[in-house]
Image (cartoon, rainbow, N blue to C red; front, side):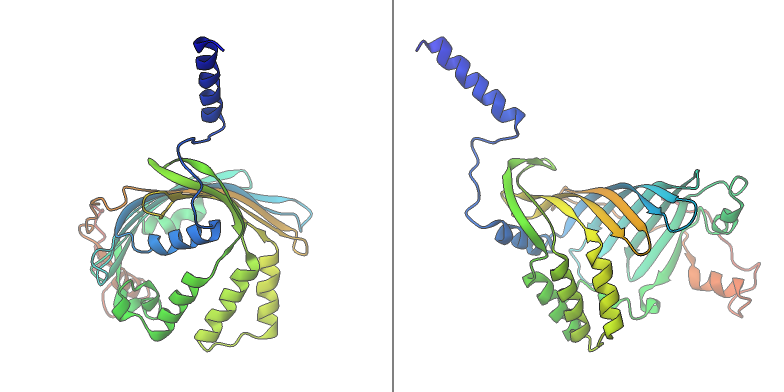
Length: 326
């Protein structure tokens, strides 16, 4: 065989490999798919800084009435976090998108930040109240940053703790259960390819709803909140209508989750409600510095609510709502 023919065959073979997404120079990992994915889930909890981009789009349909009702949604979420100081984690989330209900499209954008034991939020974009009168109340809270002290949020605060020392025994036990539970089924190694700018193992599978139910039941047991048979039946019924196929990308070098893509399928034959939502989540800049600044001139939401309710903390004219500075 001539050198020209050999070269031609090699070129065609390489082209075929590229087209089919194969990587000739990466071998299948020695671990099982379940071991790799579980390890990635655990290792991802140790990421201190990163940027996460999430895209969701789909629809929810209700065919119970005489007229079919459909809600279409598109959502983009940009998140940055810095948890180098577990006692003072920093989080910056921007959620923007639109929802179409009965032919009317509602656009919106919400900002959320967390730092210094405070939760900040702002409605950055909202439908025009002139066009959508039911949005008039939203306009009252728009274009301003508000905050709540985390100490005032109450029982939800421990759930947000990232400091191991601050966790309750129940929280530690739940975390341990989550780490040892395999929430996936039918995991299959597909190949090795680029994801979020890194070489990654690619897997396909789906969420195991039986494992999810067992985990929910275990949480109730740990928290000493026994579910009634009716509650158990409702949870099982809801989970039985869910089907979530996934594609997962795990970093070859660090074995952390780089990307997740999937579809949330839901169908309830009794209520005739169904949904199909596609989503992707990309983790970028792992370990790189992120800048998260505290909003300027934020307003204490507790004071605003007190004012609106006619409380003694402030009169209706005493609360000044300055525009935010991003």
